Image (cartoon, rainbow, N blue to C red; front, side, top):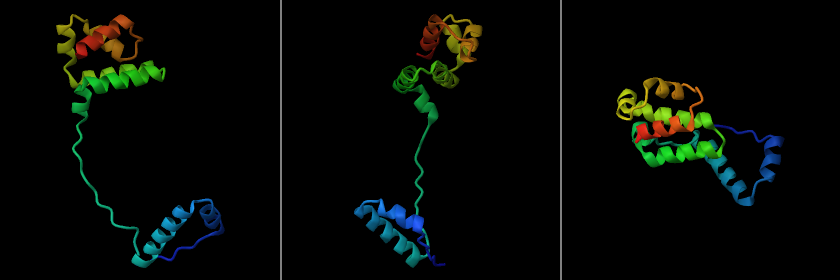
Length: 126
């Protein structure tokens, strides 16, 4: 199957606003589409990604919390801590750190935790 591309006035006006280098690259690409009859060969590559590993990384968690604070996003801080706590055992962490489970769950469910409770949550995470 081959393509026949129509270059409208709108396209031509847009193209004129591009740099000479971009115009040449665009023209080359359009010629290949018309000649080869397809938009190109795309190779998919699978990469290993584990959100669990990332959520256990204290540096990643610290950066995420810091970004939330810089963006005045207190809910985001709770979401980051909650995501981390999902990876670790919440009940076990709360028990080990002498934090009532109700405080843990209330803080996570957006009940406006105090800085003390947040500190305990972070301590649970560590």
